Length: 455
Image (cartoon, rainbow, N blue to C red; front, side, top):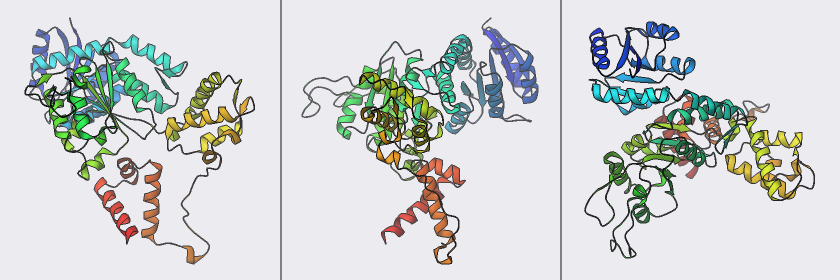
C-alpha cells in the first residue's frame, strides 16, 4: 500500500468517489464529513496525508491545516478547493499546506500530489535532525539564530525546500535573503545541480535579457558568440533572481512567459528551448505597492509569489543580535589575530537598542569596525561606529505642556504613519497591515503628504 489518507469532505458522493478511486491506486482511505470529526480521528489514527476541503460546514480547511501544522507538523496537508485562484493557493501554502488541488478533481494528478506528500512525510527523521541542528549550535547552513522568528524560518525552509513552486523571499536590505535562498536550494532535491544567481538591479535591461535568456551570435553588436543564458545554465537546479523588483517593466512580460511556458527564446533566436529550474526571487521592495503604482506586473508578481518567505528584520530578533555579534566577533578577531573574549554589558545594551536599518549586513560591518579599533579583550561602546554609540530611540510625543506646541489630529496621524513606515523599513504592505488600512488608502495618504511637502 502507498499510504494512509485521511479525507475531510462534507460531500458524501465525493468521499465515496475518492475512497474507490484512490483505493484502486494503492491508498488506504478514511473519510470524515466535518472538520471536528476529522481532527478528532487524527489524534488517534496513524495517517500519512490529510486531504481536506477548503469549505466545510463547521470550519475552514485552512483552519484545519493550521491546527495540524501546530499539533502534528509531520503530517502533510493537501487542500481541495473549487476556486482555483492564486489567492487560494497562496493562502493554503501560508497556512502550512503541502499542496492544493482544484475541483473537479483529476484523480491521476491528485495521486501524483499524494505520492509527493507521502514521500515528504517520510522525511520525518531528516526534519528532526535539522531541528537538532537549529537548537545546537543554532546554525542552519550559514543562517544563525535561536529566536522564534529564526526557528520559524528554519522550519519553513525545511518544509518548502522540496516544493517545485516559485518562492519569493522578501525583506529589508541586508536581512539574509540570499543566504536563505542558498539554504532552500541546499536542502532541496535539486541540491546536486547548480544554484545560479543574478542581481537584476546590476545591469541594464538589454544586457539582463541576454543574461537570462541567452542570445545567438550576431543578435546584436557585441554578440560575438552564442550565450546559453542563465535559465539553461541552471537547468535541473535553481535560478535565484535577486532584486527582482528592479527588472524593467518592458522585460517583465518575457520573464512571465518563460515562467508560464517553461521555455526561453534566446535573443536573436527563432525557436523555444525548454528548461527545468526552480525559481527563487528576492526583493527589498514592496512589490504589492509597486503593482498598485504600475511599476510591476500583477500577473508576474503572483507567478513569483506562490510561496513567500518574509525575512525578519534584525531589530525584531532580540537576543539573536548578540548571538550574531559574538559570531562575527570570533570570526574577525581570528582573522586579525586578536584575543577578544566578548562584549561588554554596555556594548550589548547599545547593540540591542539600535534599530539596525541595514540589518545583519550592518551588524557585521559594525563588529568588524569594533574588532579593528578595540585595544581590550572585550568590545566596549567606544569601539562601535558613532551612529550606533549615539543612537537614541525616537518617540512620538502625545501631548505637551504648552498649548502652542500641540498639533492637529491630521498632523498627528501623518507623524504616526511616517513613524510606522520608518520602523518597517519603508514596507508599505506591512505598514498598512499595522495601521489596519488597505494599501490604496495608505498610498493615497502618502501621495498627499508628498504633494503637500512640495508646495
